[in-house]
Length: 306
Image (cartoon, rainbow, N blue to C red; front, side):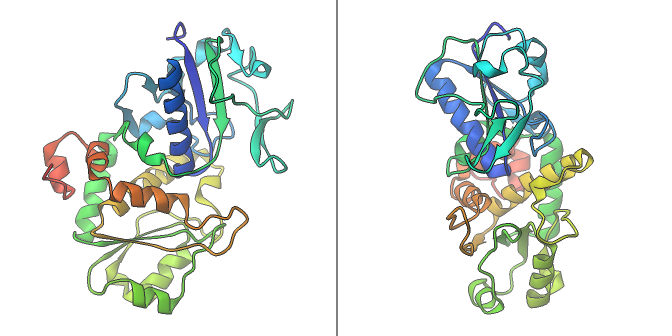
């Protein structure tokens, strides 16, 4: 593979950011004839595990396990040139002035001009940043079978049709009041709650009844800690699995409830995770392909009809 023209994508941030950066890389690669290699297990990446442990690529030129090529990358000509000979071992840090990740030694951005082709056989894009195109990346992927098994178990516990609710309530704060909740969410049906704050789970159980609320993600004891900032690699598999399955569970809900954010430094109206969930919820062909090619699994997930 190291004889191909490669784009090494090291996406950072939460799940929506990562998917948006992967899709950005894929669109560039299609335009300029490259193969995208996704590396989410590199030092300082938040995911801290191989993307291929959770997803199967549906495209030959989207490789989700960087281990297949990393051994030869330091021998290739690369852009940015600052990474020459050390693609596998450079460090990155977040530059608050630039609001971007930079290479630790030089302070330069480890990326490239997305409107330009490059002669180098290897180019590197190491960045965070969200947007609205996560659905494009999801259309290129399929869940691994072990995730589908857990998904179907959780769906069985909730019992469709259910309501899906997403509340981002750590660094971003949702506009969330008891009056708003009671007036907005339809009565009676079970509620699947995806949130990053265990205090929010307690609030919903108090308001709607513990038996009605279903939340599966293992959350930090400290309410305000962003889940994707947890440094312990041992927690990565469970945390990553839950984030991915929360997204799919929201998309499978009969009705989806999202909450605007309080004013924040980034000017975001909604969490990127909320945006990704809404797009996946409204794009059933992508949702079906993401979950499985097995008609029985799709039927069990409530997607039996094409």
